[in-house]
Amino acid sequence: MFDFLRNITKSAEEKQQEALSAYLSDALSPKERQQFEAQLAQDPGLQAELEQMRALRQALRQMPPRRVPRNFTLDPAVYGRPARQPLIQAYPILRGATALTAVFLIFALAAGLFTGLGEDAQSMAVEMVPAAEVALEAAPQEEVVTEGEAVEVTRIVTETVLEMEAADTAVEEMEIPAEEPLAEEAPAEAPPLVEAAATKAMAPDNLAGAAEAEEAAMEEEALPSPTASPTPTMTPTSTPTPVSTAVPLAQATLPAASSRQAGDSEISSAPPQVSMEPTALPFPADEIDGAETAVSPLSALTPLQWLQLGLLLLLLVLAAITLYARRQLK
Amino acid sequence: MDETALIQQAKEGDVNAYNRLVLHYQQLVYNVTYRIMGEPQSAEDATQEAFISAYKSLNKFRGGNFKAWLLRIATNACYDELRRRKRRPQSSLDELTEENESFAFMRDPAEGPEAHQQKMDLTRAIEDCLQGLPEDQRVTAVLCDVEGYDYNEIAAITSVSLGTVKSRVSRARAKLRDCLQGVQELLPASYRLDTVG
Image (cartoon, rainbow over all chains, first blue to last red; front, top):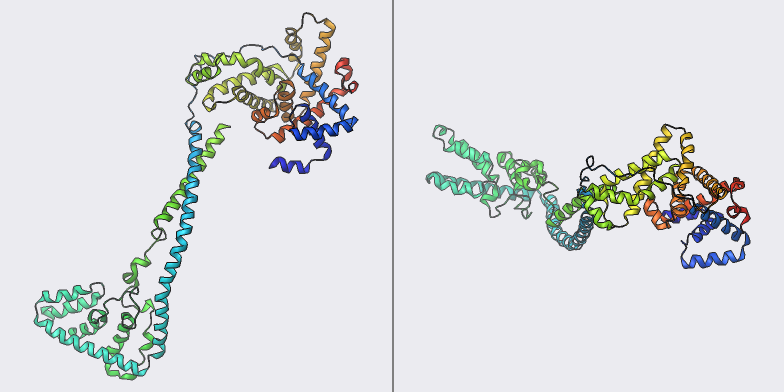
């Protein structure tokens, strides 16, 4: 390629000189030779120049050889075994391994490309369904949560609290182990505050404030309404039905329940809090979707992507070593 | 001489086997280095350096043309020696006196004293002109026109492309022709460039 570029910059005279020299050294291709001979037949000046060059070459070839002034043999006592060159001896293997790795990497990338297209289409379809549901459900929720619905929410909350009070009364009569299934039912969902309040209520030395504590616990237990309602999960990954958006609902109920006496007008102010904002969650978002927020880019890689990454790194290392070995060869 | 076997033995540390290779190639290597260096002492140093270096890196030789590989090491040794010489220029008076003795052994018994003198004059003129060439062109001219290697072999020895070899040979010949035309009164009639063609 560099020869091609160099030829572009050469003058016609330089090209003719090179052709003449190459003709003299029998280094022209048959086609070039034919062209040059045709040119030679028509150009007496070129013929004269060729003869000059031929005479020069003959003079150079007839230079007498020089006598060797001494022998250049090595002393066996001084020179031991030639140094081993493991990198250079392994050069053919390195070169082959580099080429093979490059081929594997190309296959892996191609496989990733083809499977990725299919997976992307599937995952996009899967992701779009809940997104659409959320969009459909969230939008009306914000718009439709009117005063009447707020009253309905308050009614549900009130019923729930009453049920919980009834259940708690029953629980008080039961043995402590009987409570454990309830606590275990949603250990992750029930905030520690609930258990603390419950424990505090069950503590013998706090019997005096047990009623208040129970009431507080009831209110707190109303928070994880999923534990009491048919929609058990609270994580954002759960189906985002209006009821299963338990956290916002619970948040809505918390001020609502705590300010029941304040009247419906105050409760109607709850809807703005019926939002999906993670900052409004009653406990850190890490606890809810910790698995997703703590995911590092590397752990999100598929096995095929790991393979691609590994092959790429291997190729880089092998290429570097091969180039180094090649430099050593020269 | 089984060159391959000697090379293998030398790789295993048999210096005597390597010395047999040295004896076989030293005339060739010395002449190439002499034409490139232009004087005996530097040629001797470069030749010795080339043989030592070739032995040390014998395990780098992976088969093929051992002579070309050896000549590549020799030309590299010449380049190193030329760089050293540039750093510390030296007189060549001693070499001129020694030169006649060196040529004497090549004298053809049937050749008369006058013919021998003409031949020596011509050789000296060519050597002077060779020394006037740039290093790369000189190496290429020596390998091509003095030693008779083809373009592909020269490309392998000097580690350059075929196009570069073509270009260097062409330029070197043109310069040598111009140089020798300037001293043509020294040349015998048969070697006078302007009388031909």
